[in-house]
Each structure stands twice: as C-alpha cells, then as structure tokens.
Length: 576
Image 1 (cartoon, rainbow, N blue to C red):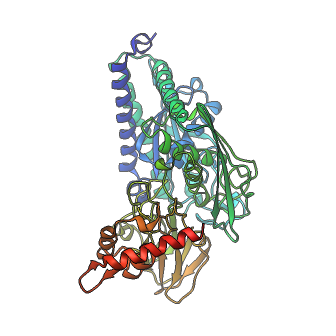
Image 2 (image 1 turned 135 degrees about the vertical axis):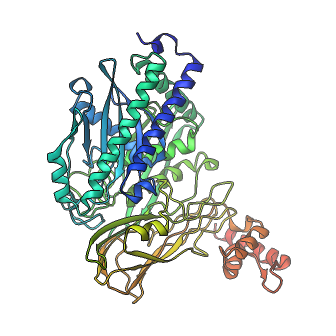
Image 3 (image 1 turned 180 degrees about the vertical axis):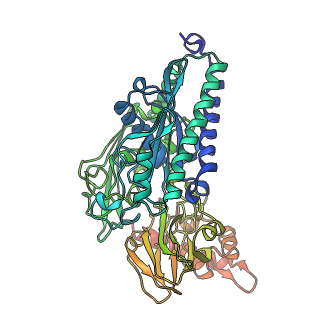
C-alpha cells in the first residue's frame, strides 16, 4: 500500500493538492511556450489537466477554457476505454479530435498521455488546444455536415514507445493549409504532457507514493461533499428560463428547467430548438461543460473543478436538439450556441439566488477566420478571437471587452499583424453599448480591419448577438447588439463567408453586456464619470439614466436629474 493510503492527513493532502496544481500549471506553460499558434500562446485557447488511472479528472491548470477542460473530464474516459492503461507502455501517447468525444468540433485536438511509475500505469495527462487549421471548408458556421468541416482523427496513437506515428503526421500535413503550425502544435501538446508526467513522478517519489488512488479518492469525496452542501443552500424547487438565440437564418430558443432537490441538482433542456443544418450545433459533451461551469461559478466557486464536483449535477438535453446534436450534423461554430448556456443557467438561478449571478453578456466569442494569400503570394490562414461586454453583477459593473464564459484573452493587434497580413486600423470600446443599470454592463468594442493583400481574402464570420440583445436583470437595461459591415456599405451574413476585396475595410462592432437593477438607482456621480471617460454619451446619460449633465461646467444638474428620475420611475410603475 502506498504511503498515501496509510496516512493522508489534512496537512499532507494540502501539500499534495498544491503540488498537483503546480504540476498542471507547468504542463500548460510548457504547451503555451512551445506552441506555434497565437490563439494558444497569446489567447490561452487550451486546457491541461491530470487524471487518475481510471480517467477521472483530478486537477486542472489555471489557464484554459471550460469548453476544453470540462469536456476533457468526459473525453479522457473514452481514451481509457479504447486503450486501457495496462495495454500501453512508457512513451505511448494518444489523440483525437472527434467532436462527439471531445470538445465539440474538429479544430480542437486532445492529446492524452499515460504516466507510468514503478512498473505500472498510475494516471494520465491530457490537454486540448485549438489547431490553426484542420482542412475542410475552413472554420465557420455555414457547413451543412461535419464531413465538410475538416479532417477527422479518431482515437489513435500519436506516439508509440517514443516514436511518432509518421503515417498520421503525413495525413495531417496533406489535409491542412498550415501544416507546420498544426503539426508543430501536436509536438507542443506532447511536450506539455511530458513535462507534467516528469513532475508528477518526482512528486510521487518524494512522498513515496505507489499510486494516486487514495489521493484521488479523497480529493473527489471532499469536492463532492462541498458541492452538495452548496446545492443544499439553494431553496428546493424547479426554476425555469428561456434564452432567445440569433440562430443562423432564423432565431432559436434555449429552454432550461433547473431542479434543486436537497443535495442534488438536475438541469434539463427539454423544449430547446431542434438541431439545424448549419454548423452551430452543440454536442452533449460541450453542453455538459458549459452547464457545470456557470453552476460552479454561482454556487461553489471555491470548490476545485474535478470529478467529485461534477457528481451532484445531472445534465439532460433531448437527443436531436441543438444542444445534443446527432452525427453527422455540422458543429464547427458550436460556441455560438454553447456559450449561451451560461445565460440560461444564470437566468434560472436568478429566481433563487439573484445575488450570485451575472446579467446577460455578449456570451459567444466573435471568431474571425481569414485566409488567402499575402502580397508575396504565400498562403495564410489565421484566426483571432474577440469579446464584447460582460453582464453587470449585483454589486459591480460588467467588464468591458472580456470573454465570458470562455475566458479567452484578446490577441494584441501587434501579434496579429506580426504573423498575418491582417491590419487592425482601429480597436476601441463602443460608447453607449453597455446596458444601463444601477450597475451597468461592460462595453463592446469596435475594430476596423484591412487586408495587406492584392487579392481578395476569404472572411469566415462567426458572430452572434446581432439580433438578440443581452437581457438586463431586475430592472437593468439590455446591451447593444453587434454589427458587421464593409466600407462600401455591404452587410455580410454574420455567420457566413465572403471575400474582402483589396482596399476594403471591414468593421466589427461587438455587442455590449446588460445592466443589473434599474438605471435610475445609479449614483449620478458615477454616470458623470462614465460620460467623462467616453463610456456613456451625454444623451444616453439623460435618456437611459435620467441624469442631466451641464456640459458647460461638466457637473450634474441635480434638480433636473431628480425631476427626470421621478418621471422615469412613475413610467416604470405604470407599465407593471
């Protein structure tokens, strides 16, 4: 029996737990430093974690997105079933990008590596990151079937006893537009897992551990107990919400019923729109990931995210719905639906614990995929992610130009221009895009892009909230919707593909987050400060907040403000 199995007291548990967190953070850092792709290096579009021998997630790196790490929590078990750890050897490693087993689309590749200690398999390291290209019709929302969306890699060997699967590498290189970047990132992913494995074995040697069984069991049991206790604090009952979605050509609806029964919680998406014939469908893995994440944020943010914290939560989505789509539907831009799961969860929870949720935000990332040829005739394919405003919180304003729930960072303009012929002529916050409230939403941003190319460049748009605005909570106002247009006045489909002619610019205006509580409750001095900072116009201060500003002195007209706010409150009461 391992030492861990004999005497894992509270002090040793704390030491080992913090060591695990340090290890997975080193794993993620190694991957990021070795990556060939700016969305991995700069934006952090990856996740990394350590798993026990049965494939249960023990710990995750700080860097990462829920769409990767929470799907890996399920995905690694598929690897374990396909290749039990006792059938593998040191130096072996596996991978897949199967959307229904992994994170929901072909562009995310998961690499899983077994760890061996004292002659037996003791655990796994896994990571998922976004590939720059995976072939097909390029990343986008307009495919009709998954077969159009790129190269499918089933669960298979990446390395066998330290030797790379050269046949796989050649197949990948022959099917993608940027072979050096894609293959380079596969090696970077393996490097991250290798770093994690070395550090884990060092820890096990230092503390004389034969295996991770007792450690994982205790981590899971404590996390499960803490999560169940957090659920117990929510009043029993079923809470409902509906979220309107832009969809592709027509709006869709996301329905949720969240049931609390003592220490168990069930989330059911019955009534949600059926899957569609475009690439915005969501696989169940991704639905589960972006349901459990906001739940943990709201009810138990201090509990570690691992197998134990998932156990008290059951997630149901009707098969064939847009949240549990059947193969072979297209799924390339699944985040344009999946990221809105957070808002359904918070909308339902707001009825039971409004002090613990966010108002609606821009939710889905605006993903901009561009491909073509630069002025030297070299092919390029490039993607970058952008964020609108977050929804306000019950005690503070929403964050501007910040991705939630994905956590992806914006890539600096300098980094974009250094590795692609994309020129960013403007990047600024959008005044008046935030929903008004006692606490206002975060602002969206505006970007103006131009291609440094003498040929047309293909622009694949993955943009949402151009129809349905972020909803304000408890009297807060909605955020502004997004816009997309060219300098010649053309307005492309926000989820389609088109060519940007040489010399034309394209403007992206990202949506804003919604407000929390009535805007006339916001202190006039805070409104004045927003006006001074350029976040809110003088007109919006008057119309949305009921604050009259003397632009000669740049002070608040207190008498005018009091009269206007009184009228706004009376009008609100008369509408009830």
